[in-house]
Amino acid sequence: MHLPEGILYERSCVFAGFAILYMLVTVPHLLPWNTKGTLVGILSWCHLIGAVSPWVGSFLYHLFMNVNYDEVFYRTLLKVDMIGIWLCQSFGAIPMMAAAVHCLADNVWYCCIFIYCSLSMWGLLKAMTARSPWERRLCFAPPFLMRMLVMALRCFGIGGGSPEALTHIILQDFIAVIGATIGALRIPEKWIPGRLDLALNSHNVMHVMVVLAVCSMHTATLKDLAWMSDPSTCNRTSPLPSGREEL
Image 1 (cartoon, one colour):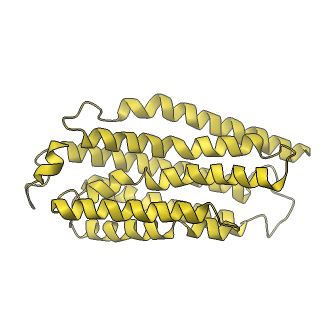
Image 2 (cartoon, helix red, strand yellow):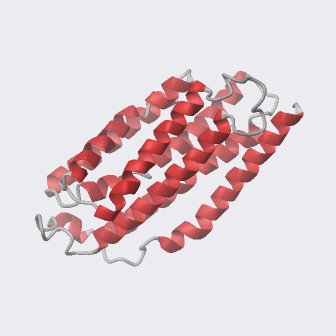
């Protein structure tokens, strides 16, 4: 292992490990676990899993990426990293999806959640067989497009969701798309090769963008969960369906 690679490797592991510890220590205390009904509790677990999982996958990937094994081992590490990202994109986004259709009819709510979960499972299956950086990123396109659809409805006041969370909802996916594009295109080191091995390369920028995206997701989720915890949120549109009220 060359010195620049070793320094980058060490920094990546420390950064990912710190992120995991920070999330596990701070996030659980901010979630509304004691709210009446189990729906918000389930969504809180989804958020915790989504917030921690990308750092667990990244930590394991960076910890073993320079181990001198074969290609199969390295591709397994890539899959572990992809599973962490997938958990963030799927479980982490479920609270936003649930809030966005919170005031719709019961059958529409369940249908939307089922479709999103199905698209997420399809993305996972494709991600496990992807062979290129672009293939791995495009696996998340179907659930991403559905999130864009419900976000558009949310902008017009259809379905539900905290108005205060909308900006962070937009930022979480916008920042993530920029980070994924920078990582896939190897910007900016492809223009000045060899000069950004220690800092400011696409890998560093991508991780910073992931942090910002997860922070936006966390802020939006807290606002949405607090909004859903208020039983009067849907009074202006339609009453909360009884099936989910029991949850």
